[in-house]
Amino acid sequence: MKNILVAIALIFTGFVFGQDSAKALLDEVTAKVKYYENISIDFKYVLQNTEEDIRQETRGDVVMQGEKYVLNILGITRIYDGKTLYSISPEDEEVTISTENIEDENTITPSKMLSFYENGYNYSMDILQNINGRKIQYVKLIPIDSKSEIKHVLLGIDVNTKNIYNLIEIGSNDTKTTLTVNSFKTNEPLSKTLFTFDKSKYKNYYINKLD
Image 1 (spheres, rainbow, N blue to C red):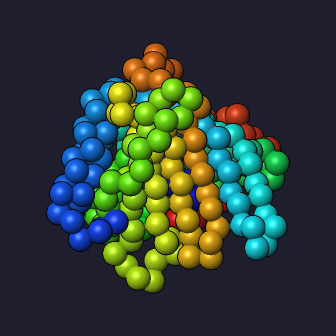
Image 2 (cartoon, rainbow, N blue to C red):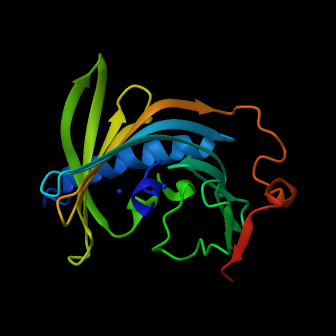
């Protein structure tokens, strides 16, 4: 789940120009995103580990407005209203409620997925690819912490729109996770209750309060 949240909420080569160019591009993407009133993303998520013969592919979607979000992935809905996180599992008929500490730098939320690179990473420009007629510029990010579970991240940015195309993360155990944006919509009309947990809809669910 943490890997998934790194995206929908990111290498230092020693060349100042590369570092500055990469940061400028990332900052441009982040500034554009902050301009939107809300963002709706539909994405594909693939996890691969060749050595363990593991491949998991799924789709999900997330709606974000400021710090608030609704994320649907792997059959679970996560609602964050700005103060409290509700994780709803229809399969288990369980709702887990917790106060998510958004100040904790180790907590990566959808609202942080385009700004988490600002601390803890070195980065540089990587390859420029033509994918289905779109110019995708990759930025490579390497954690400063040598004990990180992440080897590096490749963030693909559409050169023309400055929107995220995909994110490829390589873990320390060589697990590769790829999140590809299928659709990116902004300033959609949203229900006033979208980020509100309605307890009456889950009368038969077990309510698990963590704090």
